[in-house]
Structure formats: C-alpha cells, structure tokens
Image (cartoon, rainbow, N blue to C red; front, side):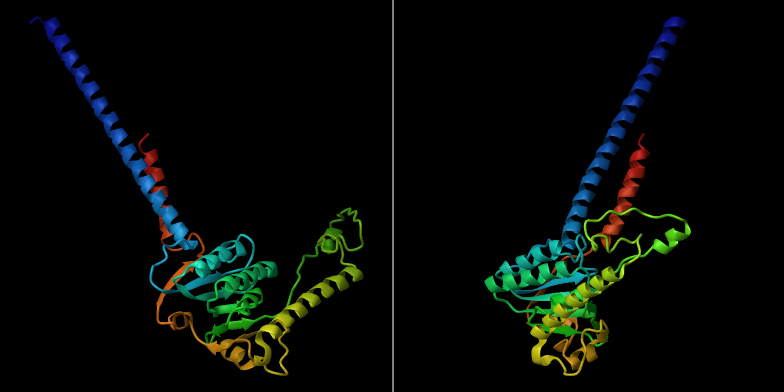
Length: 307
C-alpha cells in the first residue's frame, strides 16, 4: 500500500469515527429529550391531580362518611371560599347517598355578603331535596359573612379560643381630595344624580352622600341582626347588643347564645362514628404543590442544558 493510499484510509477512518460520534451524540440528545418530555408529562399529571384534590376533587369512598367542607379565608368572588367553589361541593355532599352528615369547617373573617348568601341559600335548597344534618365548626375565626353562613346550619360549634361574631355591615372608601388640592389637581365629574359619584375618592364627600352611605350600612346591619335573631331565637341572651361589630371568644359566644357548644373540628366531625372525608376546597399552591414548582424549574434548566 502506497503512502497516499494509507493517508486516504486513515482519513476515511477518521471521518467514520466522527460520524459515529455525532450519531451517538444525536441519539443521546434524543434520549435525554424523550426522558425530559416523559418526566414533564408525569409531573404535570401529578400536579393536576394534586391541584384537583386541593380544590375538592376526590374519590368518595363507598362506605358511609361525614363530609367536611371548608370555608377558609375571605369570602369573595374568585377566592377559595367563594360560592363558585363551595356550592358545587355542597351539592356533591348532599347528593351523595353515602354522605350521612355535613360539617362546615369555617376559618374566615367574613367578606362579601352576597357570596355568603349564595352559599347559605344553596344549603337551604340542597337540604330540602336531600335532608341531612349539617353543622358548622368555627376554628380560629368565624366572623361577619362567615358567621352569617354558620347561622343556617343545625348547630354551631367553636373552640374555646375561637373568635365569633362581628355582626354588622361596613362600607369603606378612600378620600384623596385634600392631597390632590395640595397638588392643585382636580377631577371633573359629570353625574346624572346627586349620589351617582358618592364614593369617588377624588372628590369630597357631601353631607347628603355621607348620610346615604351611613343609611345603607345601617339597613344592612339591621338585616343581619334580623337574621341572627331568626336563626338563634331564644338562645340569645337578653340585654346584649349583637350589632356592635365586636367579636367574642368561644366561651363568651356560647354564654350569649351565638353558638351552641364548645367543640373542635376533629371531635365534632368524628362524633357520628363514621369515616370523615375532606371535600375541600383548599387554597392552591399549598403543601407539596409548591415543591412541584421547584421541580418544574429544575426541568427547565435541564432542558436548557441540552442545547
């Protein structure tokens, strides 16, 4: 073999080695990307499963159970304790034949009265179709609109150190007009009525608007008081003003008739001697779902390292 033929043979072998190495790199890159995609699909499925569980989706056992439904945090549209999230779970619990009792686990300072009304009106409707005992257990706090929901159950429990009450109504707003005056800034407002812009924070409150705002909250407060009296009746202690907006601890609340008994969620939920099933809803992003976010970040960095 001549020197030229040797060089050509060596060159061909080097080219083949390079091609083999590149094919191997491409195969390994495809394998890693396949593993990445598979891991992502599995983790995303676990994430959806965990999220669904936190929002109340769970397989209901076949045996007789007591359903626990949570009203946690502010009661407002879009929140975890919104009617949109709580009402479907109430329906699910009342319609399930093996659910023999429902416990509302309340830990809320209150919120929007209309959201609370949607919840307790749903309780009334579901109980009419599917009669079942339903009780409320106030954990740390059950105040204002949250207590309004509790009123429409068979019995209200609270712990010794729970905070209960805040019966009344409140309307709030900002007043920036003095700050704007210092900056020599004003807003032009054209309204069709004297009270159309009464809550505009950039204009001073007129005496007429001030009277109207107070009248509104006074009427709502009286309506709330009437609900308390209708629900609690003779259980209420005479001589106590329930509409001051104050809260009482569990012991005081029982003494004045706002609750029926002292009891914690664990004791009350298990008092029917059957399995307890948590229906939710739970706030998203809690527990192991937070760790899932970290895992997704790691996967993203791993994917970037493949390029």
